[in-house]
Length: 501
Ligand code: NAD
Image (cartoon, rainbow, N blue to C red):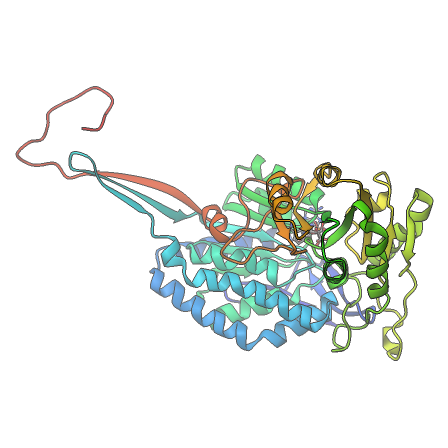
């Protein structure tokens, strides 16, 4: 059985803790590898490597850092297919979707290539007689990143390219469910010329996470994952005096107004609800049909849902792959089987699904897509983040009722409105309580040069990730006030508080 180990100080390091976990191919249900789980001592070793690398890396010229990042971008481009294949083999998503994930991660590397422009700082001359003031931003030190299973390449790339471009060194703790993509990302970074120890990958579970959160040499923590763990990470990191951004779960609503094009809305809802088997933090999991749009829209979504091709991610004809684990598959199915008893109408039931023509997939973690209509707000399928291919439809009489419904959710990651009415869309942008808003765009994931982040229980900490917020998070400010006195007029002694003159 293949073992998946750590990447510390520029090379592979075999795990020695004696603890490990299985990695499966979700399309077949077979175990494909064993991943090492780091001990406290191994975590300390990764942090020590990052700390040792910080001195030279943080003082290396911007030209040197960007030269590495440009080479890295080219290597990622050349290895897109290989990274995507690793994602499909361990996560299960279809190859085209995995390629999309790699492309969206590379956006942040491209942003990082332009870091000299972003770190330029500010200068005010002659704020007082012979006095100038400059604002600079400097790196923090060792930064830790803890990432979820659903984007094993993109979410790590939301973090480390900008962190290292700013001069930090990094310890990445990827999800133990699909750990291989991050190792390839680290190997390619080394090939691009990144000095040893600047980017380290530590495989593991909560032992490694908790050690990173309390380690005195870790200055900041970027976390992406579920809301309960995000809460835990933020509280523990703050307790240990660290800067932290912790992005959590979501329940994203798509409001469809009566004037929206129903075919366009149905097409968009299908892609946003069932793409990547619904295992996206920006998936649309709730459609709010306003006015009389409900019956027509549900009919159009159901008709499309039944035609989706579900199969292994390495089959180019598959549009949706399996779920991540058997336990998760069964949990998602339980929301559908329990929905009718809680008052919802099960319009499409995907709980039984077998992949035809691929006997090796008989034990894969496949689920068909499900569509639940008239879901009560008290039903578990509405209250919980299901994180699977289950779309709930709720009805609202008016725009105001729809917005009230969206805003009463504890989460606030993304929200979308579908309409042809610019005035309604504008109101929605201002009134909806979510960090990312789409107007006729169901999954409004910001491009790399804007920042990504939710509100309420979807983000703990006040910095969004990547974009300008990412740069602010991975640096701290310093303001330098400089005076070059005139030797002929030193100005004498003053005990008053300095004022500008
Ligand atoms: P998760 O919270 O279970 O795991 C995330 C990371 O935390 C993993 O690296 C895991 O090893 C670690 N972890 C798990 N339990 C831990 C514990 N008790 N103590 C310390 N560390 C622990 O999340 P997941 O299941 O891997 O990913 C799915 C979740 O992530 C969903 O809720 C989804 O909405 C969310 N997500 C959010 C965003 C966003 O940008 N807001 C993006 C992607 C995923």
